Length: 141
Image (cartoon, rainbow, N blue to C red):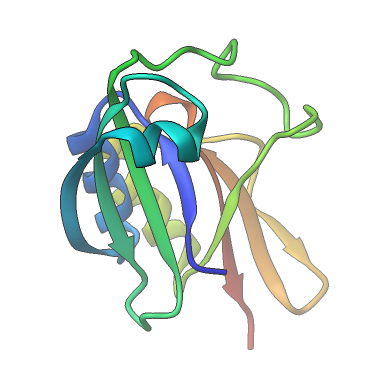
C-alpha cells in the first residue's frame, strides 16, 4: 500500500491532528490539470494535498482539500462504524490515555470507550476534525 487518502475541508486542522498522532508532514502541493481530472473522474480539479508520513516511514496519509470542484458531503459526520463503505485508519500508540488527552484539543471525541482485548491490547475509536474516523491500539505487556 502506498497511502490512504482523506478528503478534508480544513487542511491545517487535519495536519495538526495527525501531527499530534506522531505523523510528519512530508510535503504539500497543489495538483490540477487533465491528468488529475482523468484520475479522479471529475472535471476542472484543483486540489491542495498534504502527504503525512508515519515516523517509521512505512505508512502515509494523503490529505486532500478540493478547491474546485467543491467537496461534497457524504452525509452526517457521525455515521456508525457499521455503515457500508465506512473506513478508519488504526494507529499504534504507546499510551492510549495520553494520546486521547493530546488529541482532544484538536477536536477528537471518543466514540465508545477504551476497551481491553484479552491481555493483548487497549483499543478505541475516535472521531477527529470533520468526522475523520481513526482507531488507537496500545499493545499490552
